[in-house]
Length: 241
Image (cartoon, rainbow, N blue to C red; front, side, top):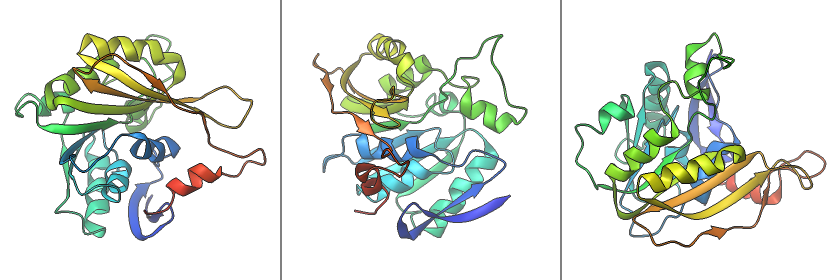
């Protein structure tokens, strides 16, 4: 069922969602608040933009032009509606295409920043795929894997441009290997924990195209207080700057 919700605590922004597909989650909130943005950023690419939570949040933090590419037509249509209802069509462009096909015809070295909240799980004979194909594509590396993401970044980022992704901590070594294979140097990492004294369940990592070695490990981010409510830091991300 299609629904229109407020985008987090932004009382003047909306997002269209469909309960038959994935609703956006905390990882799509943390990534645009983690990735490095400055006044020199003019053009951003969001790979696998879903119903556009990351482009919408980014639009509150930067004046850059944002392109979101979404392979699934049903989800693309939700993203289009979300952009239109917020009157952001002049700043956010949503494209319905496979990112690997999209980059074939695009000029290289054109983006300052790339973001991606990718499928977290490898595809193999033991994969527990959802009967809903939309959910399976969002969760498993059916259409897009780690090397694909950084191969796209290698082509599409300007020199010293950055890519930020959110993923699972257990795949950190693979992520760094895929980055370096594609001339992306890891520059900062932040681990996200459900609560204090629990294991990290999310990883935020940023790399720079042709960057110099030098990796920063940022302080831990705790998503929830001990009573289960969102932490003060996370709650700040739910408000428009």
